[in-house]
Picture 1 (cartoon, rainbow, N blue to C red):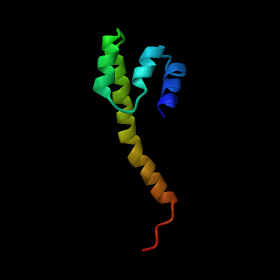
Picture 2: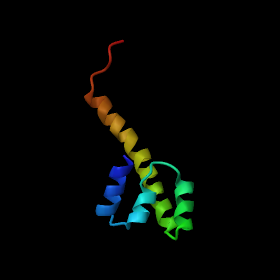
Picture 3: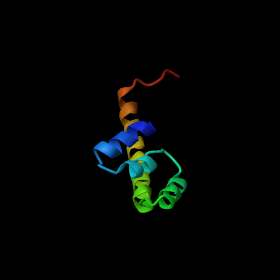
Length: 77
């Protein structure tokens, strides 16, 4: 999953390789931002990408579950 996020951020979001690399992992907002800062990368951008991803999941997950609930037959009790 991290590799797919990295490729997306490199190709479609046009981030530089280091920023895309530190923005790609699914967790570790504080840690990846600190490492980005230590190597001279932009920690604010890394943090922003993480926050946007979390916000998208929080918004999209309930919608996806509602869609699946409507399309899948109810389980027999």
